[in-house]
Amino acid sequence: MAHERIEIDLPLAKVYELLSNPVEFPKFLERIDKVERVNSQTFEYKTMIGDEEYSWTTNLIDNLRNTRFAWITISGNLNQTGTIRFTPLDNGERTRVEFSLDYRTFFGEPEEELASFIEDSPAQLAKDLAKFKELAEGGTFKETPIETDEEKEEVTA
Image (cartoon, rainbow, N blue to C red):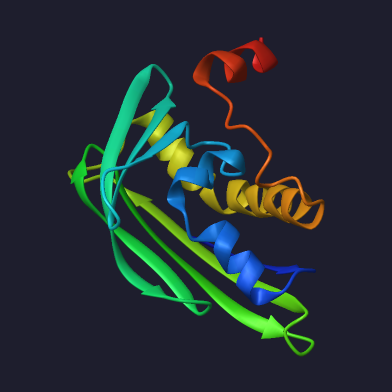
């Protein structure tokens, strides 16, 4: 399980607004390629790990405005759970974000590439939250496009 904490120099309501829509996660969660909204509580995720596509569907289980946002996987070939907690700092001018993200297989031991993906989650989450902080504090989060798989491949090629 990956658990990271970061402080954002923005009011809690703004940080909550930016982090409470999973469709926006690919802007800063580097290893998530796409998230689509199915309905107000359900989201479909997709990503490539090695040569295999992983997809899973999550349901929101907790959405306490400006306090906590959480989800669990209900189907797919990768099990992901996540919780984001929000704490106001400095009379609400700044916000502490605690982000927990856990990946597991639904069956048996993961193969090598998936095992590495899971094992690297804590370091990756720290990097991803630093990117979120940069985009949010810079005021560019909403305007930042979500890169397609092809654009990500061009950058790494």
